[in-house]
Image (tube, rainbow, N blue to C red; front, side, top):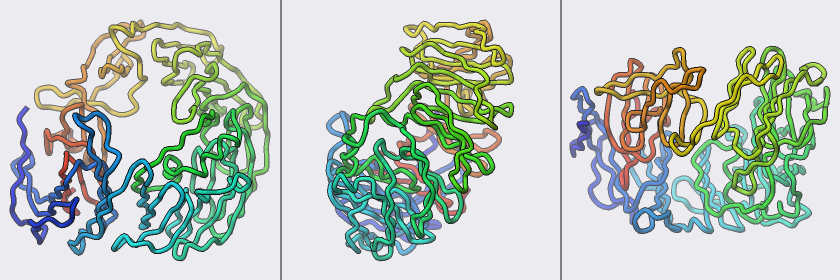
Length: 512
């Protein structure tokens, strides 16, 4: 492969060059260019730092960069790093913070900057990073339109551990409080409309951000109780990201030996919500929370709900999260229910609690279940086993499931989309995709060196990558730029950006 990447120190669209060191972490930000495969020179902004770029975000004005290097020969990440913010509009550095990943963390979301320690939190000024006020809350949801945050106090007594508070983000003042149980952590949150959020946490809860009011449906979503959940109020990190859109730097982790995520997605259909918990399946009115029906089901792990053929489909994967580790918990099963009254129509016991259920595909009358070492197929209408096939994991690797995106085969400097045709595609953990017919014979194997995965899509472009190289292609699968090296690539606020080592490359607004 020929590499087309070039960096030229010339002034193009960006009207400045900074050669002197801006801060202790940010060495310089300067105008440069690179060359696309067509030969066209394209202006870029090149930022260089004193250590590896770990993450970054651009909100339309501020370029915020997280720095974190490796220990020795890439043997784990360092405990200490920096957060650097640069104003791309006014071409100036805003702040450069040194911090410890063990004891501190940051949240950048929807125009707000929040700094966390193990026991406190602070709202920071976006311009200079100085403290605006002390919060003491772990924020889960930010409603930037109303300037309201929702969260729990970080260092709280056990009796108040489940007290969710609404915070005026302009002043830090508490405006309401309400008990929402979090024995097993928040599983998810949704915005139902401009004035209502739906929270999955030990059941379902709606919350008006202005008043905190709403209905609650309490349900068990784990197997251990609040004795372990007290740790949630004492540490910051993992739960910060729930419900938030933005750039989260997680510091201290939450170490809870509890079984959590023993629940499903909240399936919203018209004015109804379907939800499964530890041993219950329910249908509720979305506006009032009133139960239409509730039935007992076998104990669940992580469960998926969806509507198909005018029936409610439930797949219990049998997996749970024990702390931060995934584990098998119950035997997986697939069941179908009447939407109107909850009556069970049929159920298939998949009878494999030793191997992980990794994927599934359910057509009109055929259900295919993929475990890490075998594939099983059933008739949906009769629950009859059609066939099953075990994989030699020592030669092929473990099954990862059906590709959930369009992969590409790179041959002779061209990208060709991999299609199923009369076969079905299967991903393996050795890095290959195999085309398999319905006799489970491998008709073609595409190895990892020639297999490219789409890691970013925007407008009419895709970024494809394998373990070593990255390409930018257009909707005609033509190579626009590449191969190039990157560790992280994003398209935010109409700018394409990627990092490579200590450098961050930023394309101009409107180029794509």
